[in-house]
Image: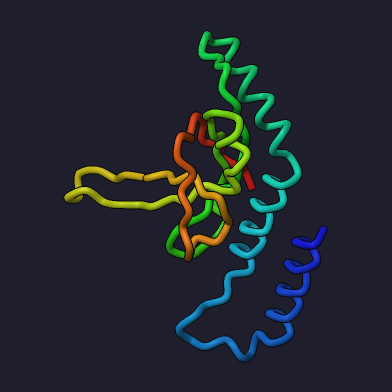
Amino acid sequence: MKKQLLTGALVLSLLTCGGLTTTTQAFNFGSLLKLGGVSFLVDRYSSQINTVLNKLMIKNGAGTNYATKVVPVLSVGTGNYIGAVQVIGPQRQVEKVKAVGQLDASINGIARANAYIPLATTNVMNLHRVDGVGVSAVVDLKL
């Protein structure tokens, strides 16, 4: 609820102060709604998404005894919510994970790599990796 209020206040302030936007920073209302939508969907439906993923893994012979949890993916460069992943590991470590940071790299123009870092915070400016936890599934959200 708090995030919805903050998102609403941000949208309202950006709409009322739209004339103050500089020409170097274009305002994209669609992007703002998408980012807010990702945050809302992950916060609201993470446990249901996690249950569906666990059932899918079990059905296909890839079940696990480790703990799992669905968390948001944050772009390390911008801090924007860009998706969701399922993390897996020992219960104590999985409980510490609040988000996963994503780093992108191009490898000599022949490949593209995404690195996922389980984080103990949603603040990508101060990375605190959670050791012993990995990413077991990537969730593509349709917005």
